[in-house]
Length: 389
Image (cartoon, rainbow, N blue to C red):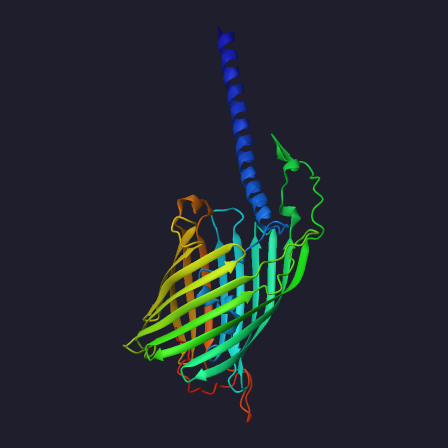
């Protein structure tokens, strides 16, 4: 009897041990397969094969990165502007996107026809660093006054793009064992190169007008990847499709800002819409920002079609305007973008932070009698020269 009980206990212990081991193996395999699925899916989406096309990354706070969308925004208002943007997209995926952007532009009004000049640098990391893209470029612009209340600007972007693929972070099916996971060497020979470098160009125009003291509007259009450069890591021709950007926005002044310490603080509305068209993709963004008492609030809706049940997001933005002096300010803004279609909630939300510095009294070239890059700007008679929002 005692022997029978002992055998039963040993059997139970053995089975329990096997179940624990099997559970551990399955858990490890499940975690590994999740990572592999994300990495392989990301690789398939990001590798520019002959029959695949990629789409540029979009920012929630596009209004805080205007030269990224249209180089004609360079020098649109007087002074020096510098912008830092960080975006973490699709946080629900282990291989989410991280994007960093820096841009700066300075206006020039002393040279006839000059708008300004700017620089831009972007970096994006996708699939836990599987694909890294770096862009650096220069942006000149020209300014064509039409009347006292209307101007037209043209801008161009010339940049160098570097894309690098880290094969060490990829896992292929022939590396996997059904029980032990990733233990084999892959027979995949890889691409012909792990780094692609190509020039890229963009061109845009902006029409800005002021209807009266309380209304100002901007209408813009730009085309990116004019030469449709080849971005393939393989010996195939995978051209980056052109992207077309159109935007329209208004600034409605309800109450003018009288200064940081004044009891009468400003109150403005900034509704707008932007449309992006790249290959077969259409992206619509519309909404409005509000400025009141040095605080920014915004709500924007984004969709790939005008149908609500398609892929769509809502973005909420909050920020603050911190005056440095009467001619300078710093803006800090945060936005939270969430999917409102239940079928796409698995991607998770996206976060974005923008830091903007504006110095209205700085220009590119100083007066003939002296001065230089930091020389004060000569004020123009145009009522749309100041930073309005």
